[in-house]
Image 1 (tube, rainbow, N blue to C red):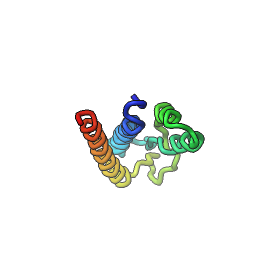
Image 2 (cartoon, rainbow, N blue to C red; image 1 turned 60 degrees about the vertical axis):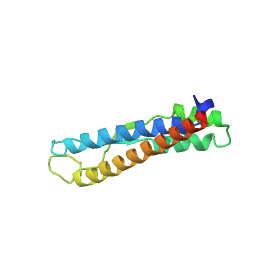
Image 3 (tube, rainbow, N blue to C red; image 1 turned 90 degrees about the vertical axis):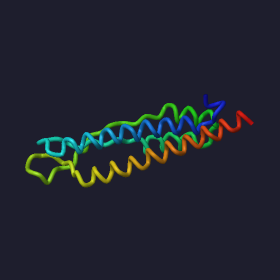
Image 4 (cartoon, rainbow, N blue to C red; image 1 turned 180 degrees about the vertical axis):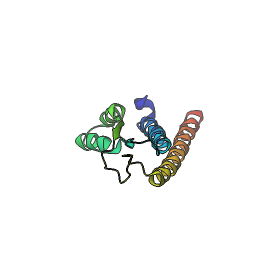
Length: 126
């Protein structure tokens, strides 16, 4: 698919998957805000993708497509100590802001993907 449509759609797919996972993890953190001993989780993607992209920076479009397709997001637990007596380290205010930010990013990415598909449809139809 990369050879026909370039890397934009593959990157949008990976970004949407990452943002969807980030929303789920953030909502899980909010839901467990009162659970004793619960440690907040977070999702990483950007750092790994940046490292892979920089290592293949001089590559071709196909190399970049392979980097995009092989990149994954990871769910990690925070090890921050809690200021609370029950050991929970979730800050629901921070998590709520992060959820709103992630939702806006997801909506923006969907809009960009729709624009790309519309552009491709226009090119195909002539």
